[in-house]
Image (cartoon, rainbow, N blue to C red; front, side, top):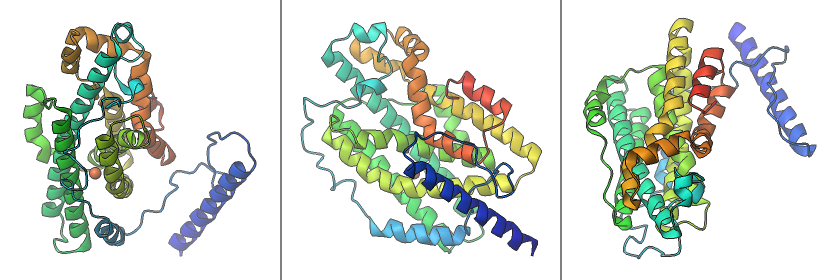
Length: 343
Ligand SMILES: [Fe+2]
């Protein structure tokens, strides 16, 4: 009875939120974030209902079987790159707007963009391989083994493998060599299967998915970018949306199954990971391709205003979700995010 009342209360608060959103959209006034309130006037702590894990997995599994692309055949990998198009939008290149940027000519800027894209794709291959290892662990440690959840997990690993194949072909299409992880980080990957489960682990997975998705979505919408890149991003975002939906539900489930003290520690650690993650994207070795000293380039990139803009943009959807769900809202998490220039 209590549960039913609680559900009714949340449903009516959801209706209020929808009515409020519709009123805001139709009034023509400028959109602004207002704290949502429940029917009783209190702060909304959880806006979403997390559905049954098996049912969600079954629905997403059907969606996955509907759209199947062949990463080797559905992009014309033999086509030559367009000499007039960029590999990365200028404002996403790490040195954009700095004095070093102004010292480069147009061709060097495009070359640096290409190497930074290759660096991102290389990091994406590592990230997707790590995600797949963690998903195989979910199957081994789960108790379903032959259910829809296991099959959806396998379909997701299949999606990651397809994206990894496309990333590797795109690196080949650029003509540049991939950027391998630095030695210490490479050794750290051996500990992947020992990574903790719970809110931090689930949050980290969601962060990887959301960052990859937001960077690729922007490229998909930009006509000045190489056609190979655009085609890849269009294929990737379809599967990415499914992965994000499932990872978001999983993060909320993980939070709800832990106590307040454990959750606070997980949330602070997750805030630290969110604050630091974009720095990993900036690869000093890419500067060598245009004759810039790697240390000089790295310092210029990290202190530039462009770094904060790009870091906030790449983590925006993840931070919006965690804010709406009340996960990274406290003063400690807020301070950590601000220190990483993403708050
Ligand atoms: Fe994914």
